[in-house]
Image 1 (cartoon, rainbow, N blue to C red):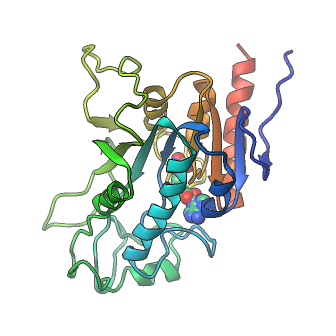
Image 2: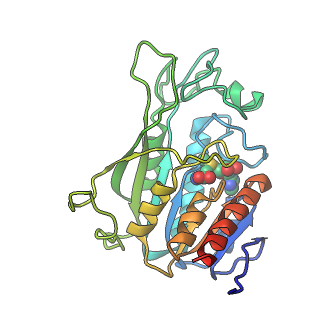
Length: 291
Ligand SMILES: C[S@@+](CC[C@H](N)C(=O)[O-])C[C@H]1O[C@@H](n2cnc3c(N)ncnc32)[C@H](O)[C@@H]1O
């Protein structure tokens, strides 16, 4: 049988094959050489929702203004490490400003691993942007506009329509069942392979993607579908290119990258999720050896 190196969690940056780096992306990204990666596919924590159990986690800031600033700092580094024709594919969710309780479901829900610290932020309307009780904060667009001001070109807003949406017990508005994926570039001329993913009719891909969740739960509370990562990688890179996910989570970007023969750098702050990532990617390697 062919001998293939298994993926390990490491702390030295090399642009060979696939690497899982454990730590704060704001500290690790500056060690990646400039213009060395083709595209970034990522989903940062959503503000004030989940607790990822680390003092430097993003999403647990006192104010959503700080959250936007932190993301601008992360994506400034991403801008530096992407090639001139590189792209960023950013999936980001919204939330409601609330006074008082948050309930058991919906965007501000008390979910499995939500801890009191994070939950408290959701019990008082943030003192910014004129927000009032029950205001949708518009966070994805606030982040997108802040990145635009910081130099990114906003090329597309793709709406991810969730086949299975989280239930909400609301009676005064429709249930939220979509999230944004922003396509951003460094320059007007960037790599985009429009032939790599088409509509079933053969037409150019539309900017709404109807995607279900992956069936096997992998122990991470907020993964995106593998098909989402697969599409972004196919559209934004070639075989052999290197892709990045600075909020690697359970490694969905890495799994898709491995399957599509791309190199990848995944950064994740919580070692528990890096281990899940390692296991999932090594399973892909094992499977490929069986054929
Ligand atoms: C929404 S999840 C990403 C899930 C991933 N797309 C997947 O499919 O598994 C965001 C991840 O960012 C991680 N994270 C939060 N702050 C971070 C930081 N400063 N540096 C690196 N990772 C961070 C969290 O631990 C969490 O796993």
